[in-house]
Length: 191
Figure 1 (tube, rainbow, N blue to C red):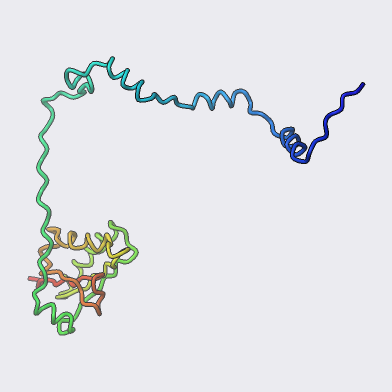
Figure 2 (figure 1 turned 90 degrees about the vertical axis):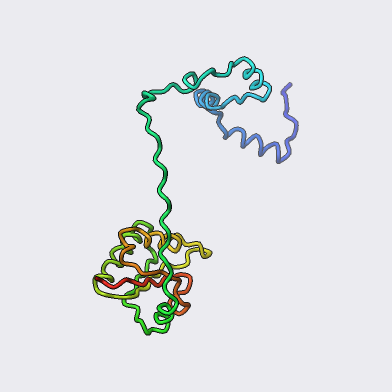
């Protein structure tokens, strides 16, 4: 008498078909996966282990020094941050805004990174001062949501001692010249 299988429904037939096409993992692959699995101790295991460990008695037991302590030098205090350049005198700023004092040159720093912008700004200020300009416009842009890096860093760069001797003052530009995204830089007379 032959054994007959009970009739299958479509779901069982599909499952058998899929199962016949799927191959198992190679045994070495399974071992690799097991090796990578980390066993993380529970809190109880950590607390039990912590009770067995004695606290270190001095620093050398935790991190031995590799240099002679007599060679360690005290840290130098950080220099005070450079104060930003002074603002432009109100009457002079008004003359710049109304074009009675012409803006001698303009620098647009859009698209520059910080290093490029600083080098470009220093060259621009030196050249404008050498050419005898009394006021220049530096366009930094507002940045995303009004917090542009160039906008924040430009006054610091202008306060650098190398440029400080050439700059009479700095103030935010009028709306027609760029508003919050630009600065008027008043230059001292070359003398």
